[in-house]
Amino acid sequence: MSTLPSPEQRLYAIVEQGLCIGCGLCQSVAGKDKVQVIKTTQGYQQPVVVGELDHDTVNKIYATCPGTCIEGLPEKLVEPDTRVDNVWGPWRRMARAFAGDENERHIGATGGVLTALGVYLLKSKQVNFILHAKSSTRDPSFGDRQLSFSEAEVIESAGSRYGPTATLIDIDEVLDRNQPFAFIAKPCDISALRNYARHDERVDRLVKYWLTMVCGGYGTPASTRAFYQRIGIEPEEVTALRYRGYGCPGPTRVETKDAVKEVHYLDFWGDDESMWGLPFRCKVCPDGIGEAADIAAADTWPGGSPNRIDSETDPGVNAIVARTRAGEELVAAAVADGALSIEYDITADDMSIYQPHQMHKKYAAWARHQGLADEGRIKPETARLRIKELSEELPEDINDHQRNGTRKRIQDGKVGEPTPEIWRHQ
Ligand SMILES: Cc1cc2nc3c(=O)[nH]c(=O)nc-3n(C[C@H](O)[C@H](O)[C@H](O)COP(=O)(O)OP(=O)(O)OC[C@H]3O[C@@H](n4cnc5c(N)ncnc54)[C@H](O)[C@@H]3O)c2cc1C
Image 1: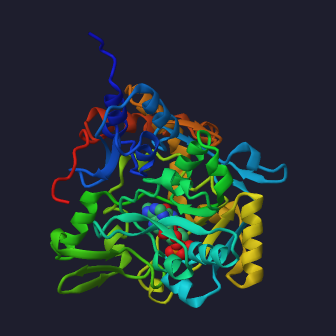
Image 2: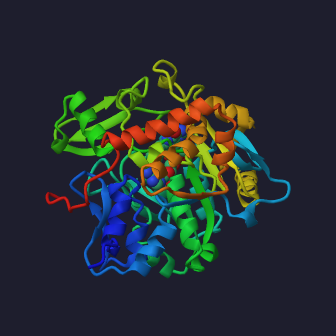
């Protein structure tokens, strides 16, 4: 009898080893008669096998899943005069910017740049729709994949979803529309669709713009439940959750059938990150900075966190990194149109001041991945992210600390998820 893992076991290994981010792509790759990305007992959205899987399909999933394969900007998009910062990746322009429209700026998570660009692309008829995310109608902490065909729909989807969000769950059907569109999503979603582009020529033909946010990871379902309880609300009573927006960062707003409670964003995330609970995949992320996108948008709080006093009146300013010629030209055109305002240009050093956690994670990624390999876990395949070069800049003891820390977490049973099982109360 064969002792080799079955196709189903191989797919589940990605989840069990903590590398699934719940983007939904595997459902599209395998077909929903075989794999469904659905809410599971752990409260995540994860793949559940519902039909007969074969090894070829699982091979294709491994080649496209952003848990197992993460690459930087495709080489053909790096121009001879594109600068490449070792931490911040390829870039043509970095600037502080905000939406030209006051309402978009106010509603947006930071300064409304991603919303403003989405609206601009629709209005200027460069794309027919935007593929992005909005708050879920199924679970208030989730995001749902959203297709926005109008300005109003883009604006309704503004704000960050810090819960499970499967933007690529039906990407095959989205591509079947055969219409040009822009994709706004997390860096891992961008990696996933870039991976898929190598298997489906429609992706590069139809995705006209790739826009992302710098991302430190989303909240685990357990930490979101703990947050509800901290503020005296029973998780089952929640009907809506807005993480941020309506100011920068704006309040975190929880609705139940009978009440609305708004707390400071820091009461959700914690002042010192002590309340952050991240999926494991986010802890070993080699690309929270959106290297494969045309433009990445971020916050601009020095040190990475807002403070309680200034955030009462902060209208919101994004840091933007235009990585490709298309991204640079889009920024210039949106500024000329008044859709976007630039405060002033910045450098990679400014990005590290705004995002020290991203810089540290980028330096640590290689050693953490080595720790995974040491323990016989799946080591994500990476390319064009410079993580090995960055680790070589660090003293040996720091690399050892990161590598051994990952090993210890695995040995202590702290890394991983149970085999996915469908959540029965949905
Ligand atoms: C999980 C997560 C972690 C983040 N971590 C950091 C960080 O470490 N550092 C930092 O500077 N910024 C972080 N951000 C980004 C920040 O919250 C803002 O999204 C970013 O600055 C863009 O602001 P904006 O005002 O331009 O966005 P908006 O104008 O509000 O537009 C946001 C766009 O992103 C889409 N979107 C929101 N959530 C998701 C999601 N979960 N999946 C896919 N698409 C989504 C929306 O549909 C909308 O189109 C994070 C965002 C998320 C979702």
